[in-house]
Length: 240
Image (cartoon, rainbow, N blue to C red):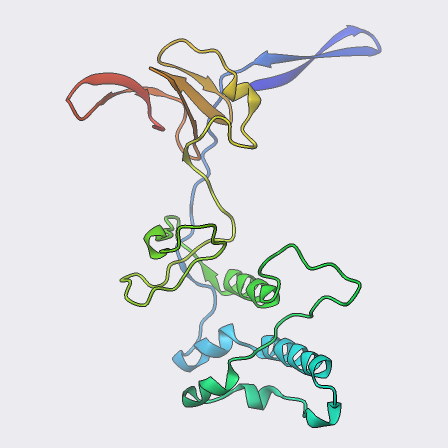
């Protein structure tokens, strides 16, 4: 890790230089447990997630979209919250919801491919943060995703054992890292190391038979003795 040092040369002049300093991983303790942040009865859970603000926003967008589609506005009767709150057996009557305004004739199409549902997505992200505090160890089951192309969102697979998982809004990357990945620190990637040595920056790189670059959120760049599958002992970083 490098730190900026100031040296006074003259009375009114300071010179700034960079000096090497051993890096230390700052420990951030996880002191809270996963739990609901509100106390509710069983019948109140649905209304906790789907409140009047969400329903009113959907109503406004549905009515606005109807006025754009129907040439004769007299043929449309504004919907209301009572119509949206339906029984389960009538769900097929409500396949067409509208959540966001369409771009106008002189407006560009939004870059976000999910802009059609973005208001609802943001609503649930904020709502979950207000009512639930997750645990420290989270898991996103990647095996749920059968689509192998460039899919921006996850799929629901009916016969999967874990149909739903918690996914945080912030993506945390930890583990080995491709050296030419966009955003990698140049000081780490270009570091010249001897064998079984590490470069101590926010990211890390280790020289063994070849360079191994990684990101660590928890462990320091410490060399430890490990045993491979053949029972051979070697030195490696605790991160890898």
